[in-house]
Image (cartoon, rainbow over all chains, first blue to last red; front, side, top):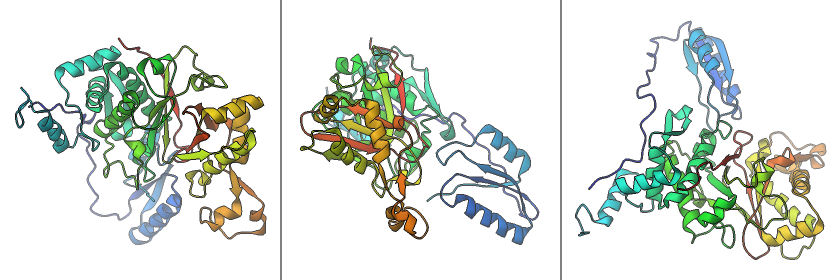
Length: 92
Length: 342
C-alpha cells in the first residue's frame, strides 16, 4: 500500500531562535503591534511595567499594516539591530 | 484484485489517508503515480514548478502537491488549471492569506469562475449554484481547501482557528451565468472577455435574500444593503469588500430599469449603513450614545468598486449577499487561467 504525502516541507527547514536572556535588566525592548483593538495600549502598558520592574527601554516600535500582514524586512532589520527582546502577538 | 484488507483494497487506502491526517473529513480518492501525472498534464505543468508562497508560514506551493491534492479531491485533470489559478490568487500579497485563513471568523474561500472555460468544464452557474451535485464545483473548491490544509499549514486547531467555520470551507466554487445584464464580472475587473479567470474572495457568511414582490431596483437593493451591514459584521470597524451574487430575476429588474452595475454598487454603498447609536447600543462601537449618534450614519462600505456584483443562480426571486472577512486586510484577487486543459 503506497500512501502519497500531500503535505509540503517548510521552505527553511530550521529556524534558529536567539537564546532567552537570563535577565531583563536594562535591556532594549522592541514592540510589534498588529492593529487589533487595544493592541498598542496593551503592549505599551506591558512595556511600562517592564521598565518599572527591570529598567528596560523601548527602543523600536513597529506597527504592522494589519494582523493579517507579515512584518516587513525593514522592520525585522530594525528589531534585530535595535532591540534585545521583542514583544508581539496580540489576539482577540 | 481488490480484496478487502489487502494493499489494493480501496477502503483500506481511504482509511490510511484518514489515519495520516490528510483529509478534510470526507473520504479522498487515493492517488497513484499515474493519476498524479495525468493531473499535472491537465495543466501542462512540471511537478517542481512553484505556484506560490506564503512567506509568513514558510510554505511554498509546488505543482506536484497541488496535483496530488486535486486527485484526492476527485478533480478531473482538466480542472487543474482552475485550481492552480485559485491557489495563485491565495498567494497574492494583497489577498494576505494569513488573516482570512486563520481567523476565528473562519472564512470560506469563495471561487468565482468566469469565461468560456467555466462552461467547458461544466462549472455550475445556474440552479443550486452554491449547492451539491456538480463535480467541477465540488471538487475544484475542495482541492483548494485540501491544498490550504496540507500545503499551506491551514489545519483546524493549528493555524485555522475558526470559531465556527462554515460548510463553505469544504468547497465553495461556482461560475457566473453567461446571461448577464452587464459586462461579465471579470471584464469589469480589467480582463478580456475571451479570458477565463478565477476570483478568490474570503467570506464567513452567506445571506440568501428573498424579494418576490418588488419590480423596481430600490426595494431589492434595500434587502441587499440590510444583509451587507448587519450589527455583527466585522465591517462595522472598518471597510472591506462585499459580494452580491444576483439571481437572474433580480438582475432582470435591474436591466429593465436601466441600472448599470455602477448604479447598483453606488446605491449599495450609500445605503449599507446604520445609525451610530445602533452600533453603540450593540457594543460594536465604543462610547456612550450621544444625541448626535441617533441621526449620524455609519457606512460599512467605502467605494462602489468594493461591492462585487456577480450574476448566478436559477429561477426564483433570490440573491445572495456575502460580506467580506475582516476590514481591508484582504482583497479579492482575480487571476487569469493561463493554461488551458491539454
